Image (cartoon, rainbow, N blue to C red):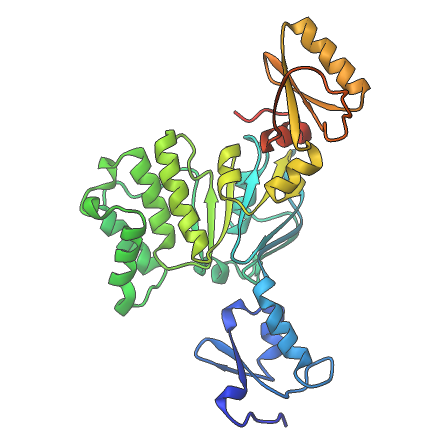
Length: 360
């Protein structure tokens, strides 16, 4: 028999939804679950023995748990391997950018996270649920913004949101508030009665994000959220996404825009040919692979070939960018760097070095 706490002050309270799935099942028989929270009596012997140490330590680590965990994920379409042994972590409450060119496997990865595509190999956990077996439970706590616009153009902005509030089973008493909140987040109050077909491209992208947020999901999946939009509209959407991150929503965002990844993502995973070739904070990736500074050398093709050859001989890495060659990794150059325009190294340098492809 477990000792009972003397008062409510002897309880440690954490949201049960944030408890990892494999611990949820183990803990329920030994702690009290009430009002959506795990209540742990002080003094309860944990599974490793001793007072408090076991279960409380497990629960205390929940704040560092993963919203998404992929290990060795493979997805094939016939002879084409779209995702090839992918490992990916998205810590709760962070924004992770999935960066890569078209065809890198980003959209296929997104589809495996909603069970639209079933992985041929590997394990996938979303919000503690194992996919595809528990995909329905995971999907109920996720918001998804697809790359392709699939809004119902015959309905108004408000009607679209009401439909999805029903589909996500938002309680009747909370439905109106949920729709109003989503409209406010997307700044579409003045167009609430307009049909979707009357909206601009930027408004429709905001509408897609509002639809994904109507049930206040814990995880937001954004597949190329600003593709094809002009810079001003893109900035507006960045502010909207950044606001969601500030509220603690976990975000996985696929993109092929370098600036978007640098602007929004806490960490970036660079994909190439279905694999993750690097992961980390943008500043760390730049320091590791490209150094702090680059020298940009301009000139005719013969001159650029000469600069490339001499830089490689000296142990530097290079990147050809049309009319110039960028010489990277100059932190230990000791005066051996070629003459040219100095600039800070950036994430695009890293991407090209690791994938051999330019971002369009």
